[in-house]
Image (tube, rainbow, N blue to C red; front, side):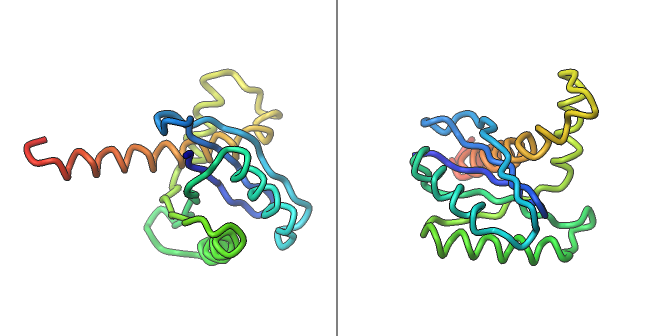
Length: 149
């Protein structure tokens, strides 16, 4: 069973999945929509991806401000999470996504993606980073729960 990572934005959702063993995360796609409030097709596509990749749970980027406060994006993300849970029955876990977009741009700089082409990749890379951060946090929790580790 795999894990799905999502970076929810006003007009896009970046998507990443783990490999079948849950060791690595790979970007899959960016789901685009014309309007921030038109989510039916986005949710339908997420359902297809859950089926296609045999997803057991969903990690959703949680867009808190750098100082830890919650703004309008957090409320919209919580609403989106509730819609996903209702439609899929899968657990949705929030993962702090502070600076993931900055990190995605740094990655694109390193690999030489032209500035005018970055919009094609940024959300997918951010979703991958969100999923990797979650996976790392789970590994740390496992190590901390083992006596003497």
